[in-house]
Image 1: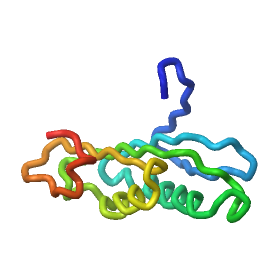
Image 2: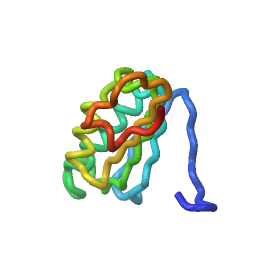
Image 3: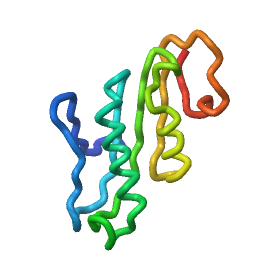
Length: 119
C-alpha cells in the first residue's frame, strides 16, 4: 500500500478468500498473532495452490502477491513457521512473510533470522 491507498480490513469473525475467475488479481496483506494464524495459514495454502496452477487451469484466477505479518512471544510459538518458509522459497516474491517476536529469550535459528524482527 502507499499513502492514500484504499484497503479493506477485516478483523476476526467468519472470513475467507475465494477469488472468482476473471476477477482482477489482488495484493493481500495477512496479519496474525499467536494461534490466530490458523485461518490465515489455510488462506496461504489456498494462495499457494492458485500460484501452482496458471491462469486457464484450476479455477482460472491469476493470483497477486501476499505478505504475511505474524507475531508471537518467541519463535517456538510461531506455528507453521517451517511450512511458511517453504512457501516463501517455493514462490519467491509472490509469498513473503515477516515474523515478529516480543519476548525472545534465546538465539533465533539461522534459517529464521532474515525474516524475524523484535526482541
